[in-house]
Length: 332
Image (cartoon, rainbow, N blue to C red):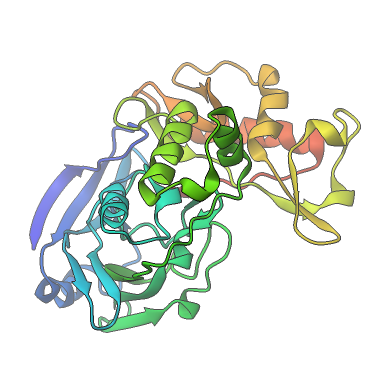
């Protein structure tokens, strides 16, 4: 276990954030020792690579980081055991190289493996919940080890029971699927295939991952080059009859039918339609290639980022009668 005082908290939004205490867990034997640090205290937070959080400038508590970086194939049980600190994109590349299906559409999503199930990361028609068998955790309430099944996690769109829970994830058990089952039923994928005169039936696992990577790079900035936390708002699911179409007609929005009454609305299109009404902020702006992405020049505070997001939410609400929900975790 490594203890640091007044430590910097790495985060992809570039917020200059520090914490009272940074505790890095380096072995399973370290986990029970956390009791002496956090027992009875609510002021702690678990971080991975900091790619999906909006940090305060100072966190007056304990930041916990788990440094489990293993990847082990359990052939007997058809399971891939991966440590929480293992880089997500490296896991995807490993699976593609080793003929393991189900990860390819999730390539180039920044962050750690341990953070992936918390908000059920997803992209291009796939979600991480589809490839998770179970999750090995340490409960910071009972200070006991626990394994959660896929159903225990209660995965939904960009959410799970792990969000704001007391569980520190140290290992995720992924299903190994070597049967060819590529998912291509997504608008931008089909458009790319058509534009390049490709045959869907002839695409390999590697081909699909490269196509997704190319599509993604055109729309989303690399957080190592431009400060951002990925998609900042969820695509809202609402009753179609509740949407205000007085300013923009139905065909101006992107709508995915969920059932007879509900639709998922493309949040990026909503923001694109109102973006000219957003006031200029000195340190925060929209990424010019994707309206779901808020970017920072590295000088923004948490409050500046949240104020900018709040203005966008207010404009979308007043224009469309749709409430946007922030996707990254906000740490206070």
